[in-house]
Length: 167
Image (cartoon, rainbow, N blue to C red; front, side, top):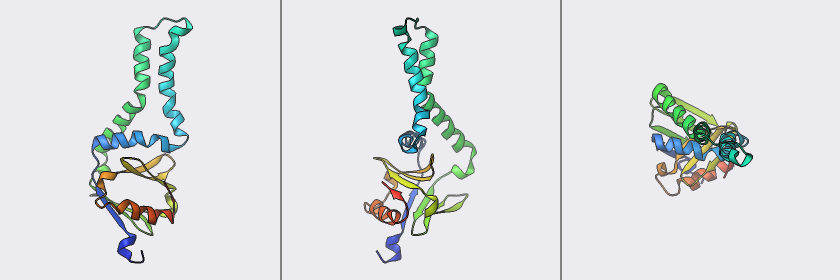
């Protein structure tokens, strides 16, 4: 891999609303201790549904509150993505991500940005997404369907492993 072209991976993507939503939910287990924050609401909903075992009556209010508790994280995620895509010009795609020995170069219709490898603590791959973390709970979500060549992920892995934690 001594040729410069081989040390460069370019991905252009325009994720759909559904992909951003699903990617945000899939990223939760990779966010460390924040998984506890996301678990509090479903646990509260479960507690409300189990109150009849403690001798309390299960009424309509408890059922509605438990449904809201179970759906808190998805609802907040939908609202955040909708608000971001509607109001933020920097969130308008398509986006081009270029990875090389310097770091990650990101560009869109309204911006160009470079993040050097020391600022990228880790990269994670799920079945459908590539997550490039730029903070403990903040990541760029790139759908794997956007990788045009089969070897792009392997080349990216080779570049990133020299500089960051890639799994």
